[in-house]
Image 1 (spheres, rainbow, N blue to C red):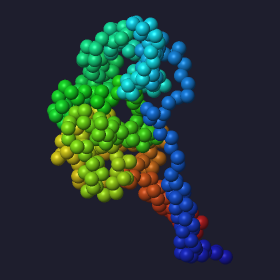
Image 2: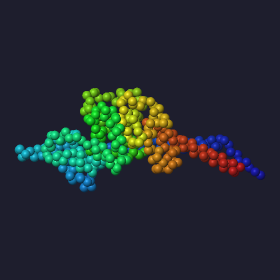
Image 3: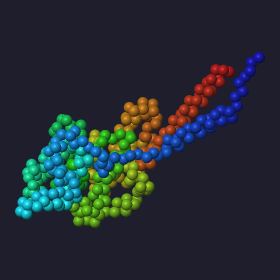
Length: 339
């Protein structure tokens, strides 16, 4: 006697519902935000062994005064020791300097050796400061960073055109504290905050802004009041994404455009041809594939939703549906074989 398998459609539906519920639970769990430590220039190491750094001993000749809020010297006339306050903008933290990109440099690599004499001659303040290209230009060791191309972009930017020689690299990048990390999927938030703070250091600080212009400080929030979900955009997208002419051969665009050319169309970012692919998310898919394999890298990548509200939710749901489809096919095949 042959018994036919009596498989009710309701049973299959029940299994699918259970699996979908499980997948949805995993999605909600994965979306739960976790605390992320963000390292910035202000985050100082608790202790630094200066003996590990080249030229640290020589640099102490400068830092014994410029490394703290006050300094002391002997008055040659009265023969008394005098203690003075150091100007805030001239104070340099050792902890910050020795984690910066220029930590192996001598102070006199960039500043005149005449600073070795105290009191410093007043005319030393007038000396020209070296720019990035002065040291890094034409050097094969740094060719991958494309300093010459960055310099060309910067010269064409609104900053350079409006302010000429007054606006230098150091307006945005402090030579004593500048630190850059390779961008990864893990530190994307850190990159966004770090880069945006460079812009806001002038555009949201009247004291710095008016070093170059007498105009009133722009109200950043009011200028961007047309932008929907403003707070989310500010924390998830860099200023340069909308205000710079992007060249996908550079890691960071330096051709800042006049405000009339700023991106204002939603579809510029929220589309399959998003401009973010050529800038902020440029290396995201390749990193995901290298780290997690080609299947997971492609299916679970962050490319499904583009823009400041980017989430993995849709990716995981898509993967769940794909898995359920395979499961249904497998069950169907098994029942056919058994029958």
